[in-house]
Image: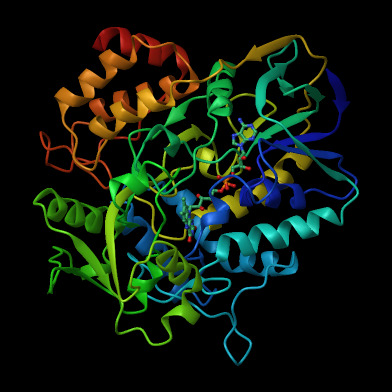
Length: 492
Ligand SMILES: Cc1cc2nc3c(=O)[nH]c(=O)nc-3n(C[C@H](O)[C@H](O)[C@H](O)COP(=O)(O)OP(=O)(O)OC[C@H]3O[C@@H](n4cnc5c(N)ncnc54)[C@H](O)[C@@H]3O)c2cc1C
């Protein structure tokens, strides 16, 4: 084992982890670890649409707040919504200062795109539809110029705590890293599904955070994207995730069609309605055996505005004027319960970005609000730690994560039980089957999601129950590991 000491260890090199590293003062010794090289893992690199922001002229911020709460089906934590949206303009400027180069208009101001659920154009993007990789490259370049930040490749395997259960380090593939605080920026858990646009990520951070005493929250809410590329089964079985067709192309005028007709969507915003509404409409059409397309023929210069999408279509020999689409799991709304600065209920342990759940997204995330949330959390988490006097002490306990080999089993189960339309019987069957498997991180995350979904006896946002169609807005659920085990015992 290599033993290393530093002030701060950050796990994850997506937008949350990199923003956090850059948020500390230059005299803080930081180690960032990730199970792959920066830009080679996590969701950030796949982001196409961009980052939602509202310039602080009052009205546009108010509209952004309204759209966020509206998309979240009224289930958002309003304090969190105000916190993040009111900082959005400042955050875009901070990212520019770190070297992020958003697409500009001729007058030098940032170009603003439109996406589903947004009542006005407010999405900053890079390279048309290559926002994520543009952000990662810029932030990593900035980090490379800093002597106080170093990078180690390795998968997290254990969390270390002192006498008071304050977190004071981690272990990862041959390294023991002692630090005064630990930050998990480990992304979402969509890897428990087969049909998804998001990459698979190890869930050891989720399991370790729970073992250390944190709570999981909102685990029933997974956002389905309405426009993943619909490829033949023989192709999808060979690729790790479905390519995404950004919603921004509907913002630019693309239409959802079933055959030659416009797809009917029961919402005042039509094909630019929030994702849960459009996803259900696409799903229902496909259930009836119909194929759904994006008709992009009205968009002039398509391949120069959306080069990533044009390349994806070329790769699969698809005409970008008529792109076949389907729904796929895209974003985990739930996660480890934190405040807006990533603080958990365990001293010394912080969780930021998609791995956390602050309540910003409610029951359905407004498009392009997650890169915003992750970047703000990263930066303010660093500021919070610098102001705090909680510091982990001498290592006394190792919390170890179980090795995982249950991915394919849990995916088949979750695809059935946690689909766009859910019901009591499939959720309960899933819980009974999952409870017989070894309790690995993937199984625990799946069990929790099915349990939270079973307990939410209503339809709200991304959680739609065919046996409980009414929207009641039951309170947000949260649970620690002991409460969860007791609940599971009662269900099986
Ligand atoms: C296809 C796609 C398009 C999207 N488009 C947009 C968009 O346009 N706008 C928007 O706002 N949001 C978008 N999202 C969502 C957004 O990209 C994510 O929510 C955001 O990037 C998450 O950032 P993060 O830093 O929290 O995690 P990630 O970027 O997922 O990074 C997680 C990091 O943690 C590391 N890691 C995880 N577990 C471990 C472990 N156990 N040990 C070591 N390392 C570990 C990973 O290797 C990775 O480096 C999109 C998502 C997808 C899938």
